[in-house]
Amino acid sequence: MKLILLGAPGAGKGTVAKQLTKLDGSIQISTGDILRGAVHAGTDLGKEAKGYMDRGDLVPDSLIMGIMEGRLQEDDCKGGFLLDGFPRTIPQAEELTTLLEKLNIKLDMVVDIDVPRDVIFDRLCTRRTCENPDCQAIYNVKSNPTKVDGICDKCGSPAVQRADETEKAIGHRLDTYNEKTAPLAGFYEKKGLLKTITGTSSDVVVAGIQKELGN
Ligand code: ADP
Image (cartoon, rainbow, N blue to C red; front, side, top):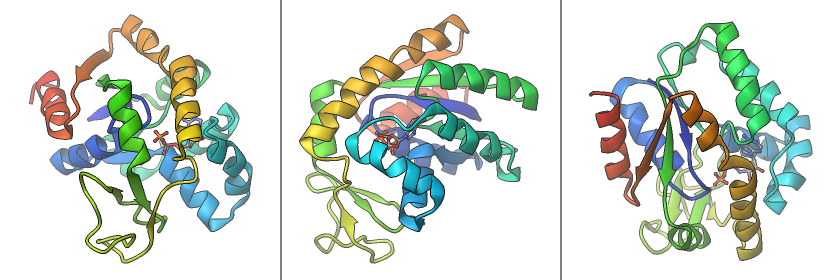
């Protein structure tokens, strides 16, 4: 499948994407994971992106398009991909449309995962992320804690609160989402690609997506 997953930070895009990859071998492409990996590795890209990310601001469109133009042409995308956290602005969506036309790739669907803001706020404040860039497993201190406090079950690296998961940065990320990313729903609705799925459980959202895809 070739899907875009829309939804506010904390809506569960990453969790849903990971479940979907198990169904048919499509890969998850998360611009947030790619950027955090670059920050951790201290590359030029990471150095440029870090300040924006820590404040909860979007990184410039040109940086993201530079990453995605190369990423979508890698071999592992041929079996399908789930775009998680991209596009995030109307200019990114417009450039993606042109890029996909150039690469002769047709999207199946754009899924908007709709979760109430209070649920999201609570989730993000209690989320913990493995800081190993090759793992980035997600936990939640209330609903899915690590077995040993602060240590990733999968790889043993520290599982920490992200720099952009303070209350202030979360509020800012949600405002940025409403202003810059929420309009993408209308953009894809006009193209006849949008499906909105309401649900706070990833299993329900995954089942909804499978139904829409006719599986
Ligand atoms: P979340 O969806 O939980 O906010 P992500 O991991 O998708 O988090 O992204 C973390 C940060 O990375 C964003 O706040 C932003 O600074 C940056 N980022 C990720 N994807 C994009 C994008 N497509 N455009 C601009 N900035 C992005």
